[in-house]
Length: 80
Image 1: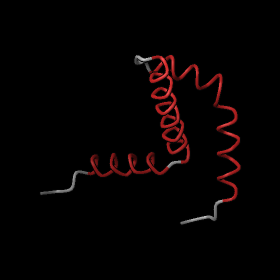
Image 2 (image 1 turned 30 degrees about the vertical axis):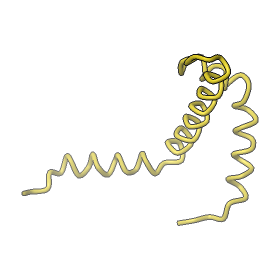
Image 3 (image 1 turned 90 degrees about the vertical axis):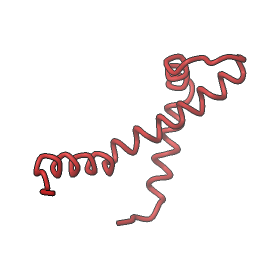
């Protein structure tokens, strides 16, 4: 079986994206939104939906979450 150069390049690009700071930030933020969705859905007694949770989280929590996250990232020792 030969290595397909297009598949190798696509795999390298995919790995680059997965290792990017922007993608890691997206995943961390998404996880917080999903937690918020779960909590608010429990309070409401029904699924509030991702969009409502997203908007609510942005308005109520995003700014402080980002500040805390940036402070935490600055204090972590560098790896790599």
